Image 1: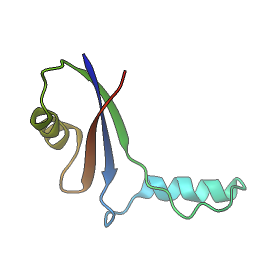
Image 2 (image 1 turned 45 degrees about the vertical axis):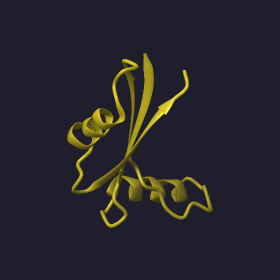
Image 3 (image 1 turned 90 degrees about the vertical axis):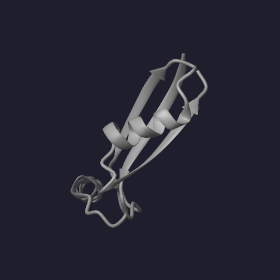
Length: 79
């Protein structure tokens, strides 16, 4: 089995109200120096070793992310 990580983030031009809320809360809680926050999704998949990169890309684009408003990265990680 292989471990695959898919990170999904809103595209830069897309408003991120959750990230804005976190950034505002950090300032109110006394944390200084944080210029902005973007909130996304992190997925960890356990896949068979023979699952190829094209299949992983199709999973990310077709199921885990909304390609209209989100970007994603797919990477294999060591166990």
